[in-house]
Image (tube, rainbow, N blue to C red):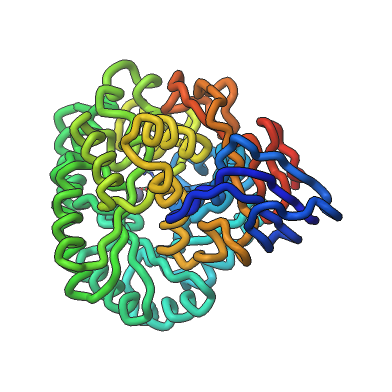
Length: 446
Ligand code: URP
Ligand code: ZN
Ligand code: ZN
């Protein structure tokens, strides 16, 4: 398949220019002006449009098992929603059962992801310490997975003690990988949750109160120290608070490799969402919880200053019926919300158009940086000769209003309900094939 995109304004991580792009059989083969139109299967005129490398979402949880059932998007519906929003690569998680070898869990998860419409990769989570981990981690790295995710929270299921986190960091550092870490102090949060419960404070707002910003920031500080001692690069997932950013910046200024991710929900929404009746509040129950407006402002600034490198969605939706598992006890509400479909439009509208970030920062945080951090670059994350033809042709004039009625995420609520956006993908090209055109799916349904 030969696809030619004419006259688009190409936005790469460090360059902005008008040119044509030729893709042959899924790879970009030419990027220059006036490419011949002879023997081309399909030509798209991108005059007046922006052309971005396909979005890479470095943090999604498709088909995640919980006590309330699986998160409501599987790899098929979730990748479909991602495509409509301009994301062409997902990085999800492998979470082994206790006792299961990391590579076995990876193979199992790979099968679950086989119905994805787009490329994907994984972070692998050691959920317990064992002496064979060194060998297992080495094997995963050999298979091309370099990122290992651990949780300081959720200690009664997948979270690890600090000593064990340190031991894993040492191994991963030694083998040239990276640790991604959920930073919230698990024991202190557990104590707060249980003390609220004892006082019969069981409504959803106590989810937020039991996970204060201080406990995220203290975890971030602790993680930075552990990673320094272990000599291991650290990527902190879903940073939500201004206090955490202070520790991250301090470490970065001292030359430590500490990278940070935030999510659209922490940039767009605040804790005022935690007032009201259960069904209104439950969709916003996530960890970390939404914070104050001063935190959202600090996060935008941190992107602009280069302290935060990526924006992932932490896409993990649950239906209202699933959220209802915690109607009598906030501790039982499955944590997480959807957003994979809206990341680019929100960051473009409220970041680029409101001049909080530049258009090149937009490309960096939605695509290039994740590709570089997680070993996908230059195959992904750039419009360049030899790269995968994952390309977004962005119409800056399309206006939308986000709504459960029209979204493609498999969920009966949307945390961005009613928010307007300007700018949307007119074409989404995946491996050289047009997957979405003018809001319609063209890619073969599996
Ligand atoms: O509430 C959230 N974020 N759920 C997904 C799991 C996690 O902690 O990232
Ligand atoms: Zn997390
Ligand atoms: Zn997550």
